[in-house]
Image 1 (cartoon, rainbow, N blue to C red):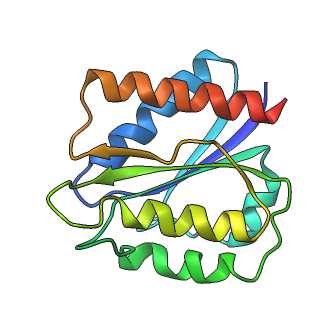
Image 2: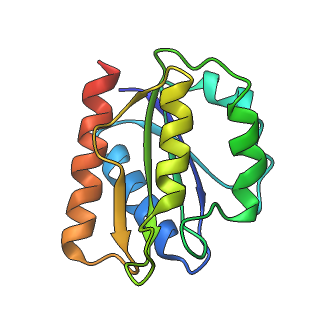
Length: 149
């Protein structure tokens, strides 16, 4: 159905669980998926143009900040025009903090400013995903697939 890239950063493993649920649902829909992690893989911002859609996952550090491993990619996004490119942004967050899931919003705002087409929901999950959160991941993926048509 399409080729998708999932990029993610996961400090505690929660965002990774979200990414894995999305991969499983995408593969069930006959999509080709490549998954890369910000802290272990080399990620060049231009790589996003090789895919039909890109899903970006990040946990939120402290009170709404980007984790350090995502900062360079975030900065590089400012210099690219992603007009019409399909994106979804997701991540784990902690409702203890005043700014809930701020890193997800930072990435989504930057992509929108650069012309990206984003899934309506900025998928935020409070800490470890539960069964209903996995269902939300599947719905999120379904929206991505609709945008790709």
